[in-house]
Amino acid sequence: AQSVTQPDIHITVSEGASLELRCNYSYGATPYLFWYVQSPGQGLQLLLKYFSGDTLVQGIKGFEAEFKRSQSSFNLRKPSVHWSDAAEYFCAVGARGSQGNLIFGKGTKLSVKP
Amino acid sequence: DTAVSQTPKYLVTQMGNDKSIKCEQNLGHDTMYWYKQDSKKFLKIMFSYNNKELIINETVPNRFSPKSPDKAHLNLHINSLELGDSAVYFCASSQDGGINEQFFGPGTRLTVL
Image 1 (tube, each protein chain N blue to C red):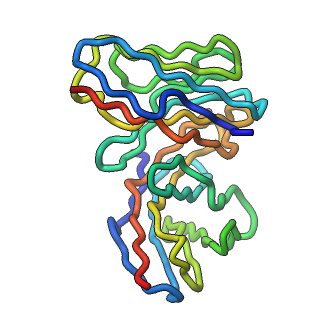
Image 2: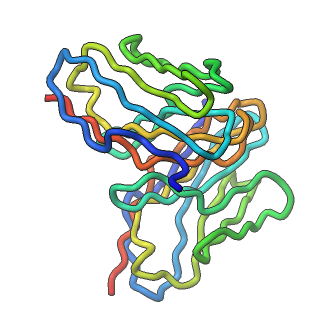
């Protein structure tokens, strides 16, 4: 079955520290992978996406993610977290021909300590 | 210049009522979606429309009926509201129905009492 797992429900990091949010997927076809961020009371904003090519992708706000096919993972990273990064982060997977049907993980809530 | 807008932002109603949520996008996209986010933040697709044609219809009670008068609008009508319908409903759009980036609206928080 197609699924996305975000093992960490809640992560707290200190401002300025590095961050890695984990995402594992199970998908029958070649996956297209996304990371979205949801600030409180807001809709989802795309941080970055991977379709093909270079497995390390850069996104907005200083985020990057690395696609590792052998591990079925697409972890999100940021070298230095800012207080404004506190939000909910969602990993999603889709595929060509899926007609836009994205499967989302359950999200990881990021808290940032001053 | 809002890309994807939804109205209302909050909706509080009684069980058994019928309500609608409206969505409009000004991005010129061909495909629009409705998602439901439950109290645990789990986000699941409900419907998608491509050029006013229903493409995805996940397992959703038939009390939920999407309507797309044109490709810039996708409204969600819900009949006989139940307590379990309480959630945040997000509209989204993308350029064609492929796997392009989906742009999300701000959400409508529906509370059924």
